[in-house]
Amino acid sequence: MMNAAIRIVAEYGFEGFTTKKWAAEAGVAEGSLYYHFKSKNDLLDQTFLFIDRDIADICNGLNLKTGGASGLKQSVTEIWWKYYRYLLGNPEKLFYYYRYRTSIRFNADVNRLQEEHYAPVMRMIRELDENYGITEKVEWDILWSYILDSTTALAYRVKKGCLSDGEKAGEQFLWLMMKGFSQFVKSF
Image (cartoon, rainbow, N blue to C red; front, top):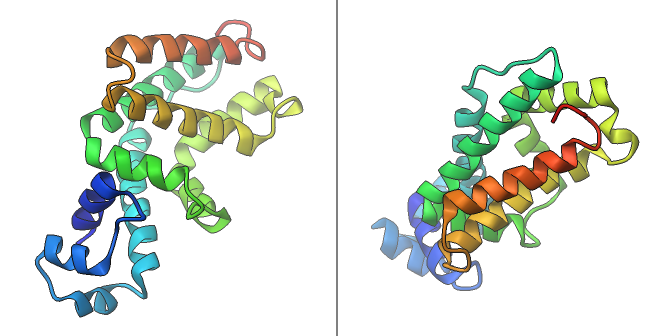
């Protein structure tokens, strides 16, 4: 059912999503939506969180290195590549995820749930903050949004054909991100 929602939003956007299209795509009766979800909006929110859990499981499953700038740099790089490659490898989910994160649907409640999904990754990035005082200059939510939103936008543009080489774009973006981190962590 969520995969049907993903396919519709990927193709038509949220504006083009209807329960009639969803039922036809999912191969179920239109009324069955309300058996599984509170509302159409609940389906769309839960679908975003479904994709987000997928990404978080990949990132959280890594063996994160802590205790020093080089270990943190290696972990940040590894997590970022996993996230970016997941997005590129799942275009329909990428389009849904991007559209959701850049829409008014994305709100504080969803953001809080998303942070719970990434607890191990958040701990690692918070260690960066504890050791290097990143949030003295940048708020935590701004840093987290920068990483997720800018990476998602990059992958979206690659898949839409605006940027021709996904790996090269990824390497350049990661270099820029690490240059930004180097303002706080000199060995980055």
